[in-house]
Amino acid sequence: HPALFASAYGLLVNELHRAPDNVLVPVQQLLTGALALDTGAVCDLGGEDFNTGVDIILYVTRLACRVDNYVSFLMDHTLGKHRCVDAPLREVKIPPSTLATLAAGRRALRLLLEGEVAPLLEEYLHKLDKETRN
Image (cartoon, rainbow, N blue to C red; front, side, top):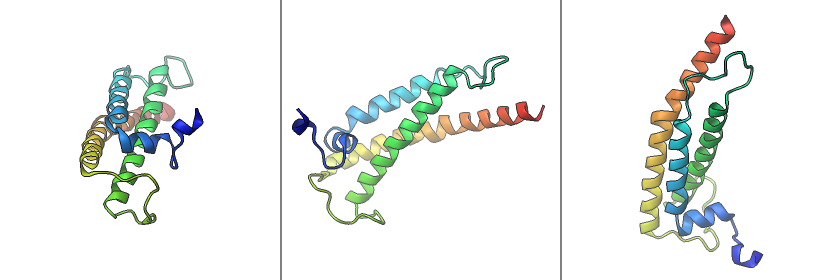
């Protein structure tokens, strides 16, 4: 029934607006699980492509960053800080309790992204640079 799932701004905004923990907690868990796949190697021995663990880490990182962007948009819009969109969003009114949940979820997500993922990506870049110079 498409009418039951219809949302003016897409399902992700709808879920973040109505049940943010149902999105934010699983994305954090996916990111934590993906990071556990790091073997220390970017490519398999003799391979030219990233190993599967790196592919998964990069995919989940992109997903987490996209969710972070949506959360940031909703928070900025709700607080009147968004630079481009200042008109009300149809059917999206975020109460203070949901705003607090979004803020806590974004903090936890960014802690993972900035504290664990960013250094790992820097390490990957360093290893790839070293490999290509030899």
